[in-house]
Length: 139
Image 1 (cartoon, rainbow, N blue to C red):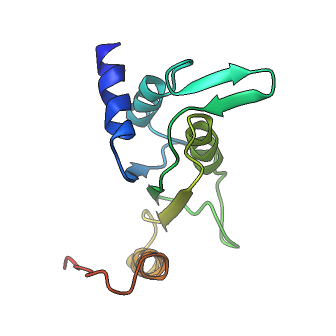
Image 2 (tube, one colour; image 1 turned 135 degrees about the vertical axis):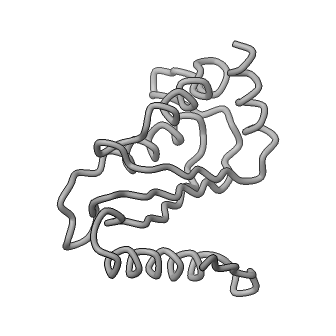
């Protein structure tokens, strides 16, 4: 419980949350699932009521960056996406409803697809965040 309390306190003191994760077998990897299991606690981060779950934590922006070997969104999607709805739901249970996803899909495809996916993620980030942000690019 000490580790769970520590992780929850980090969230309580944060102004925003950034989660970076690969998509493993259509959903989150086990390490992220373990983190979720530590932070989603009845009577600590949510209450179970007759009306359903009620998050206790103050809402704040949550940014989830997802990388995927295949494509799971858009017209070229060839695999299901259980990650996005799961993360949106489980974060909502604890009170985080301001959740934005960014993705780099198709990283196991050819270099052209990877370059295109990275450019798309960069555009999405630029559109979402203030134009005054400084963007550093690695080679």
